[in-house]
Amino acid sequence: METIRHDRGKRYELHSAVVMPDHVHMLIRPLEKGPGEYFDISAIIKLIKRASRRRINQPAGASGQLWWDEYYDTMMRDESDFSARVEYMLNNPVKAGLVERPEQYEFFVR
Image (cartoon, rainbow, N blue to C red):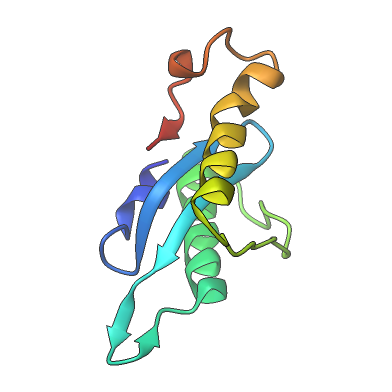
């Protein structure tokens, strides 16, 4: 979660994120880096994966790949779509049986 928060406000606006034991969901909007030019979503994801891999592997004395190469991005079309995605993310830890209520899960940021 620290890695996800690191570049918020610099490369992207972070609306919400949930870090699960085996996957991550993020709702971000790339920021403008120049007039009409935005940070590339694939570059943002690669940066987050690389930095989090280092943070996770170093203390354990491990190395190597941690994340799958692929990721899935989806464009939010309207407020209803946006709200449904946030709701899905909020309930992901509950559905996985990690907590009883979404607000109990510590690895969620909104």
